[in-house]
Structure formats: structure tokens, C-alpha cells
Image (cartoon, rainbow, N blue to C red):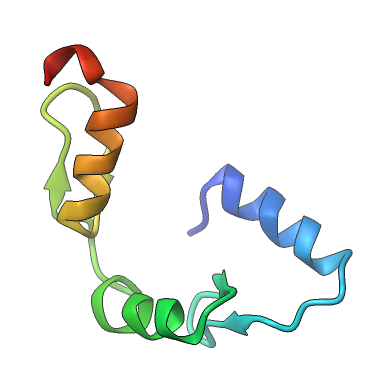
Length: 77
């Protein structure tokens, strides 16, 4: 399942000439092959396991959760 931003991004990419890398399993797209490989190894098909203590967001990577907290909840740092 894709979030709204990813759907909009995919529509945008579909309207352009795209020379990036797509996940065959879920369709997410990356400009760098190493990003696709990281996604396939750590994220694709896995349930999010990192829960934000300040809201409902869950992520598949701890680094994504830390970035989320830094951007969305800076007052808690």
C-alpha cells in the first residue's frame, strides 16, 4: 500500500522520462540503485516496527523515525 505522497510522486514520474530503479514487488521508485537495494533488504513487504511516541506514525527503519521526530516534533528534542 502506498501513501498519498508516493502515489502523487509515481504519477509525476509516469509523466516524465524515468531512468531510475523500481521495486518489482511494490513499485516504489528510486533514483539510486543502492537506495532500491536498501529498500528491498530492509523495508519492502515488512511491517513497520518503529512507532513514534508522539503520534500515530510507524516506520520500517529507526533512522526514518528519528528524522520524522526531528521534523514533526522538534519541541520534544
